[in-house]
Image (cartoon, rainbow, N blue to C red; front, side, top):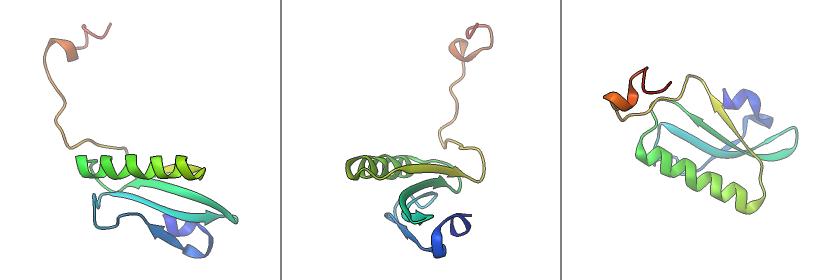
Length: 91
C-alpha cells in the first residue's frame, strides 16, 4: 500500500528489523518529505517503542507524518475484565 502512495515507490524504512509488525519510514508524496507510520499486525511493545521514537524524530525535524492502517490496530495484551470494564460501569 505504501509503495502506491509515495513518489517513485521509494520508502526508506526506520529500524526495519525492530518491531517488524510496525512499519515506519520516510518518503515523499508529491515532492514533499513525509513520515509514514503503519501496522501490519498486532502492536507489541517493541512496535510501540519504534513508533514513539519515529514520531519523536519526525517532530524534532519538523517532518509531517501520517498513519496508515490496512486493518484496525490490535493490541497483543488481553483486554482486562472485571467490573471496571463491564458495560454498566462505563455509563
